[in-house]
Image (cartoon, rainbow, N blue to C red; front, side, top):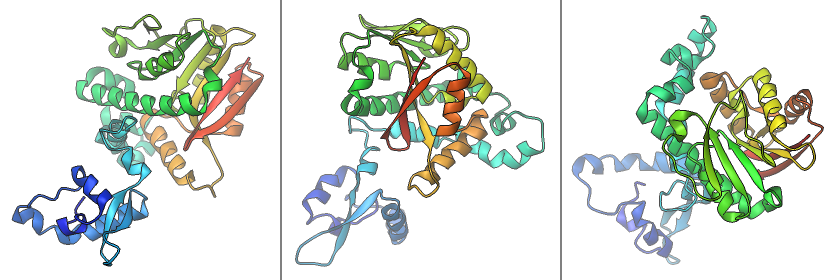
Length: 320
C-alpha cells in the first residue's frame, strides 16, 4: 500500500494493482512516512497478504502483489469479505477483550456486558451504526460461504424441497442457495429489527421469530455461525427445536461452524483467537468434534458428518 511508482511501473500485474497502490504524487506529510513502509510490507508478506514480485527480469528490484487472502478484501471482488473483517475488528467487538481482567473480578456474565452494559444482541437492537455494520458483515460472509458450498458441497442441498435459515440475517445465503437450487424454498428466520421490511420472492420468505421458541417445519434447518454464540445448555435446547422442525426420515440439520482441530494444525491459532472472541462478546465458544458429538447426542440425534471445506470452518450434517 506504500510502494513508490518505480516499484510498480515495470511489472504488468503490479500496474494492474494501481487501484490498491496509489502512485500519485504525495504531500510532504505522507512522503515522510514512506520510510516506514518496509515494516508494514514485511509483516504483510509474513501474514501472506502480500507476496514479493520481480519488477523486471533485468533488475533486482522487487515489488508487492496481492495473494488470494488479500483479494478477499477487495470490494470489487464478487466474494469479498471486507465488511465481515470490518465488523470483527470494530471496537464494539474488540474492546471487551481489554476488560477480561475486570470481568474476572465482577459478577457480569461477559466482558462485553462489563464494557457496554448490555448483551451484544441488545446493543445491536439499539445502535443503528453497529446494527448495519453487523448485518453487512454477516451478509458478506454468507455470500462467501454460499459461493464455496454451491461449488464444493452441492450434495448437501440436492434433493431438498424446503429449508429454514435460522438467524439468516438479511437473507444473503438463502438467496444464493435458492438461485443455485431453483426447486428449493427457503424461509429466513430472524429477529424483528433484522428482517422487518425485507421482501422475499417466490422461493424466499422472511419469518420473524425466536429460534429458541419455534422453528418453521422444513426438510432441513441451516445454521451458520449460530451455536458458537451460546452455552452448551442453550445449544442443546436449540438443537431440540431443530429436531422438532425436520422430518424424522430424510430431514437434517446443516451447520457451518468451526471444529477445533489439533494445535499442530496451521489454522489452530486463528481458531482459538475466535474462541476468545466468542468468550468475550457472547459467553460462547468454539468446539472440538468431541464436544459437538456430545451436543448432538444430548439433543437426540443419532449421526453426523463433518465436511472440512471452508478453511477454519466446516459443514456439519446432523441426522435424527
